[in-house]
Each structure stands twice: as structure tokens, then as C-alpha cells.
Length: 66
Image (cartoon, rainbow, N blue to C red):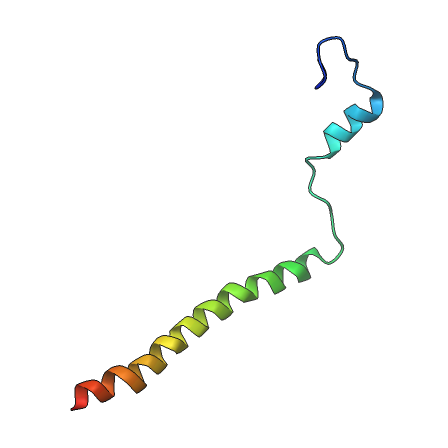
């Protein structure tokens, strides 16, 4: 049974396309791309900690010292 209805026949090309559409493409530099992608969450966490430290040093401590 095809997408268009009961009486529609699926061609060989359509069957091949449907079989191949869910496969992940293989890239040559996949490991390199993964390493680059993994850096950004680390950068976000480090910058978050730095913002907390700067806020602590320049805002909270001076207010509490008085």
C-alpha cells in the first residue's frame, strides 16, 4: 500500500528512497565535527561559572562588607 492509496503501486526507486532516507549520512570528518560540537556546551558552562564569580566578587561581597 502506497502513500497515495490502496491502488497505487510503489516503484523500485520509491522503495529504495524510503529504505535509504532514514540512514545517517557518513561524513569523512565526523569525529572532528563531533569534537567541535562538544566544545560549545563546555564554553557555556565555563562562561556561566565566570559570570557567577564576577558577580560574587564585584556585587555581593562589596554589599556585605558595609
